[in-house]
Length: 325
Image (cartoon, rainbow, N blue to C red; front, side):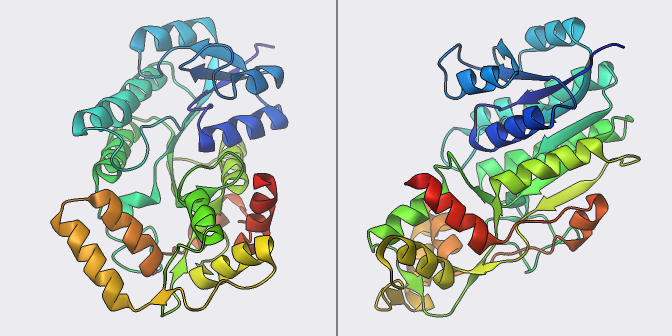
């Protein structure tokens, strides 16, 4: 019997490392990962120890991809690698990696007739704050920074190849938290510990996703029979009130709720948001919006397609906090 493989990009990144480790744990397919650095780069040693085959290079190098596909029978491709976040590059940087890079990988995957291509997009294609809440698959897409625009364009490229009979899937995760996170949840914990996070007076809801739970969604898509060309929103089982999450974090470290005096009216948040918007700082505008407005999603339709059971944010976030100690 011919051994077949799953190729994953971005396995040394935050989300990609969780997906790669979950695939290696499952053991259904041998895993090949493309990594930028050699031995000792990020989590390469751990991946190799768990059985991954490491190939050094950039995922959007067509010569490298052709070599991999010619050497190994690739059955599935999971594409997680991306230039992430706002403000980390120019428009051309985002286009080169997130758009043209994705298109290169799609074209070679299509030419080699892979069974499934799973593309990790972002819930940011709806905008930092969706135009309606809860957002669902019918919500208008409204990207509002270079990163979000690049992810939407990459989705459009994926849809182009779906129209050419590539069996491809798009996952739109909300903001993920978990082991090795250094993004919004990690900064949130640091700010709460230092008592520098100002909360809005009205209770707003935010919607995160456990990285471990997200990794499980990728595996379920690969294993689902008769599943074709779907878009999924990945999020925990429901939104969490930001104030309650702040209480959970502060209580974990100090045994009491977050100080009530660290609150301000929405009018003050609006002033800061408008200042940053006038200054054309999409990064800081987004940060203000994430802590002062509601952003959450309806995932029932996407969860039901693959029998997916999302995580409970309060329980999983406690595990995350323990991992930070």
